[in-house]
Length: 99
Image 1: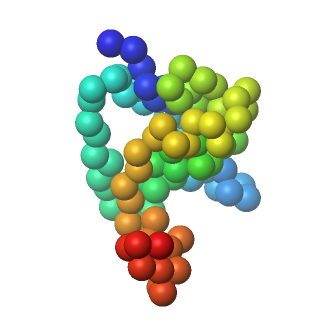
Image 2: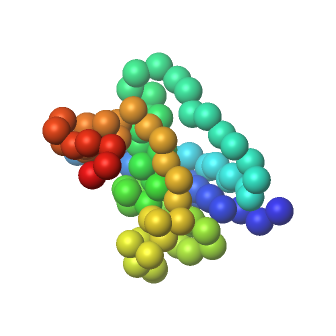
C-alpha cells in the first residue's frame, strides 16, 4: 500500500511556542484514522497539515505523493476529504445546503 499522507519530523511553531514538535505520521491508502486528544493537544493542527491547509515550520508533509511547498495545493485539495468541527466556523450562518 502506498502512503497518501506522510509527516516527517514536522514541527509547527506560533511565536516561540511549538504547537507540534517533531511529529511523524504515515497514513496508507484504504486506512481510516481518527485524531483524538485533549484541548490544545494539536489535533486541529495535524488535520490542517493533512488537508494541505497549513505548512509546517520545519519537517516535510507529503500528500498524495506530492510534497507541500513543491506543488500547487489548490490542485490537491479537491482530492482530499476532510471532516472537522473547525470547518463549521468557515461556513456563513445564512448558508443553505443548496448553496
